[in-house]
Every structure is written in C-alpha cells, then in structure tokens.
Image 1 (cartoon, rainbow, N blue to C red):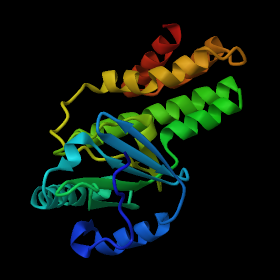
Image 2: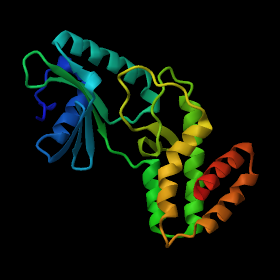
Image 3: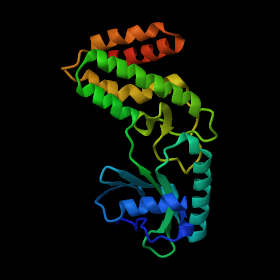
Image 4: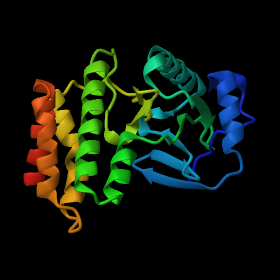
Length: 238
C-alpha cells in the first residue's frame, strides 16, 4: 500500500529547506505519479520531472526519530551544497499508520551525463559517439577525483551527474545510511560505462571498431586520457 506522500500542507518543522521546499511541494501537487516499491523502499516518479525516494532506512517508529533523521540529512545536504543540484528538498511524513513516519528526499530530474551519451548514440555517427564517450569519461573522472575528497562518499554514476556551467554536480539521492566505501577510480569508470558500451556493442548500425579507433586519438594527450581510453576500448572488446 502506497504510504502518505509529502504535500504542500506539511508543517514547516517537517520540511527543509523551507522556502524552496514549499515551492517544490506546490510544483508537484496534483500531478500524475508512478510508484515503485522494493523491499520497503519507495521510489516515486512524477511526470518525468521529479522523483521522491524513501528507503527502508528512512522508515521510523516515532516522530522524534524521524525528526532526528531529517536534521541529520539536512546537515549532510548543507555540507554538500556546492556539489549537488539545487532543486531538492527533504521532508518527513506519517506513513498512514499510527506513530510511523518516513523521511523523503525530493529531487528535480536533470539532464545527466548518461543522457548526453544516449543523445550521441541516436546519431549513429562513430566519430561523434567516440568524442562524446571521451568527454563524458573525462568529466566522470574529474567527478571521481573531486568527490573522493568529501566526507560522505556519494554513489557516482552517469545517471546522477550533470554539467552546470561546465561544473560537475551530483543530481541523485544522497545516502542516509552509513558512508559508502572508497573504490578506485579506474574501477568506478569501468562500472559506470559497462552497460552503455554493452548497449553500443549490440547495435548493428554502430561500428565498434571505428569508435575504438577514434577513441585512440585522445590517448596521446596525457596519462589520464590514456587510462580513460584504455578502459573504454577494453569494454568494447568484452
């Protein structure tokens, strides 16, 4: 059963940040939603513009615990302010059952690095695809290096990173459980690109060998570029 969702009538003490939060709640009011429930985690998509998430770790047995979770999550979000997308808020709501509450994150769906790749694939041009693959890989590498310095390790992926004024920002949900372990950059890049390159490899209209050839052009710039190209080319050969 779908729990009660945040709405524009929520009490100010249960919303953060206040002004931006009420603007967002008014924006999503009375719109079509698509809920997905998995092991007590709820992901709600609203007209492909907004998403709400409440994980099983965000389920609380009483209001005071929920308030503390909201406070902790707000502090984390404040600490990450310059690294994350602006159109987001946090709120707690009753589930519909007595003395049970949920913390919710609400975020605006942004154009991500993944979408840049998908748009390049649609053109079926090997040279343009190779160029975009390298650009996105370079931006992803920069994100891995920058975000590794943060106190909380965010789950970086191509579908939760975006370019704003040529700066990389995190557009996804911020974990509210324990910090994630550090993973080496090369492994992160391989994991991020694996499914997208697999998709390319299975498209008969796209010449994989030609993409790999055009990628090698970028391998001569510096050691980082060479590493990125090597990872991408190896994925095409799997």
